[in-house]
Length: 185
Image (cartoon, rainbow, N blue to C red; front, top):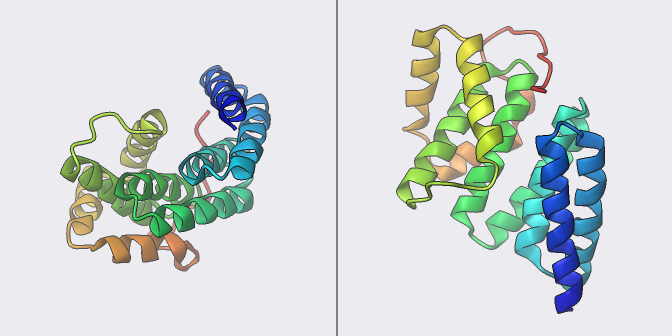
């Protein structure tokens, strides 16, 4: 089991390198392979992480439905394990999904919630930080400063359960009529 887990770790690193070089299709392939191994050995935490990464990679390739599926499965595992950091990482992924779907205020609320959770548990660097920072910058650029600040501070009134509900019910959208936006490259 240990050597298979090691292979999954290496595949995950190769996927990260491919993603950082902009080769999302190759990164997706390596992530799928690593996910298959971790499913087989039952390492649920890494299954959830790979699913979250696959969500981002699907977004980068324009497959919003697949991204949503990956994020949903990842969130279920994180919730089952009561992994607050993982849930926050996942909500950041859902935030990016909402952003590219043009639901900017909802995206900002989820990104703010992810930031608040990571601050509370003193996580300085978290899995997906690059994607998170890109999503926040893109959402900020898509809203005027007052609207961004209002959506960001509105999050502070949401419980974790309410933030998860925003992510799981993103089809309801928000009050900003914005066309679908291309994923970040």
